[in-house]
Length: 168
Image 1 (tube, rainbow, N blue to C red):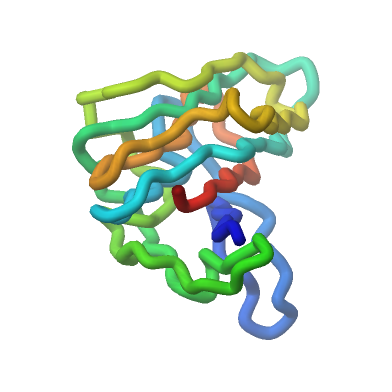
Image 2: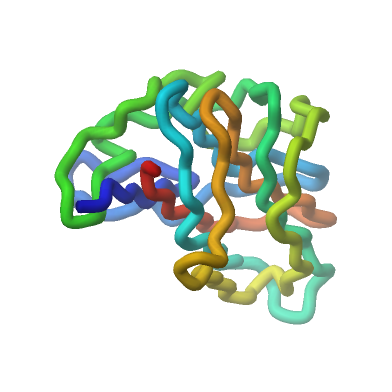
């Protein structure tokens, strides 16, 4: 049995259950999604993705995935409703929810202690990117650390991002 969770940079609409269209990011480096690994579990990174709603052919933005030793305080905390299980085990997220733990937003990167840099790519503002790691070649976030999906933009535009993680 696996406990996996897909976490977006937005919340589900309470009426329709639809995912929000993403978040608008101004220029500069931002933490789009932050996931605090529980003190008793590691997080296996299964997938990362991004869909930009900017102008095709515009200035590229950088998307990176890293493990940080310290948190960035984000603008919006996730909740049990927005970090729902997606695997064959329906176990609720064992971590905490606050703007300093499992959250998303438009906050600048303040956690300058990057323990591990997992990936980085430059994307067109209208590009779709999705990366799944093969079993046995995936990255693992250590207990009591912070998985951060970061964006660095040169223009303001809307981006929908997600990470999928599994407890291990």
